[in-house]
Image (cartoon, rainbow, N blue to C red):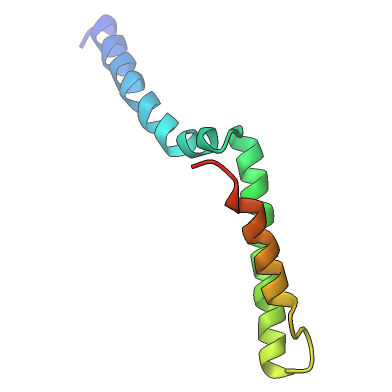
Length: 87
């Protein structure tokens, strides 16, 4: 295989890969008018808050007098933040 043929194959693969990569990593962030990193930061922070709400709910399950409304308040606040986002 000549260098020219190999370069053509590599270029074709890159052209096919770019739309797939764009769809995987950029389509949704663009729908919510964010860059990939902005979206990653928001989603990562959201995940941490979900873990915190889950932890509060777990503690409440063991000790009902503790964190009586914490998890539900956290979830309601997170829902309000995401309700008006795009896509």
